[in-house]
Length: 401
Image 1 (spheres, one colour):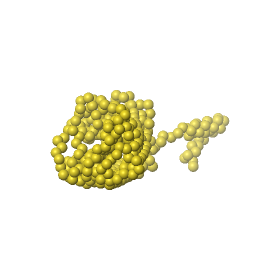
Image 2 (cartoon, rainbow, N blue to C red; image 1 turned 90 degrees about the horizontal axis):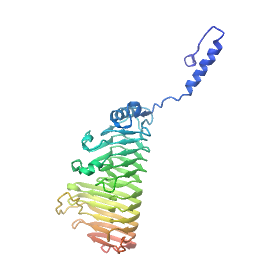
Image 3 (cartoon, rainbow, N blue to C red; image 1 turned 120 degrees about the vertical axis):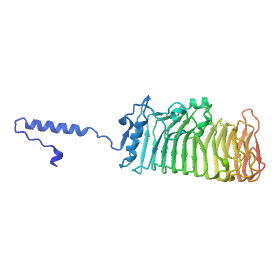
Image 4 (cartoon, rainbow, N blue to C red; image 1 turned 180 degrees about the vertical axis):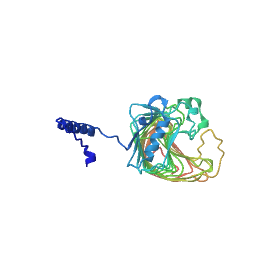
């Protein structure tokens, strides 16, 4: 069209030269790539990324535009090579696009100490709420700066969450590094269809109760390459390809605290390597709880110097509570352990400490060989109020099954 061609009429001998020059300029301009309208770089919203400046507002503004974009798969970008200080922030849906990306290539740094975390919730640093079709990925790192919390034993900030996804369906989280959370590194609550892959979660072995991943009230969750702890009202969880240690291991629970009803089922844990963890494959419930934990499979697991390789404890008490005897308990049934091998750091390698009133039923062990400790002692088992059977070789012998 005439509008797009940009005609210029000059009645002079130089008109041909000028026309050619204008065409060359037009070709040069067209060679410069246009800005990606789907990309929302936090630097364009005033972020400095200098490890010191508060970049919270820039992140909020970039998210507002990303979530409000009607384009296909808009992306908020945290660029590589910079460290962004961000205070407690929750990124809210519902977004206009059915697919939203939060790409973390640089590092995000938490404020130092509890007083600086005062935000929407004093126990939450970064959160996403009701963002469906969300993908959070990148080669960047989230640093929770937990040292102050650990040294001051900030128990009044129990259940501190470094990164939380609340009611985010069709969620993908991949390729990120998490370090130094005050307590919980990653929390998935009330989500459907979640895929978590290739995460690197590390905190010092001396950091108190710094859980890797908590999955709660969620269904159809797949997790790879992480440290795991699962919570109440959870089903259809597939955990595979995990290297774990040091730490607490993989726990289903604790369930039934303060009489709460639990419903945990269809948990599949496979291809896991535990190194010097406190526990390996653990199920733990409080006295007085209700509900059930059932249809749980642990298979193809290696233990290296693990203190409690296999443990079910229906008398769990975390030490800070007065735990009187109660007749009620979360029912534990249909639990399978298959193809487990390795070494135990304690002589008791298998513990089934089940409730006197409810007990554990349909417990199956097959092809288990946890035969020795670092000092060369033969391993043993402790088993009370557990019922089930064994198949193939089972070392140590679990006589109550």
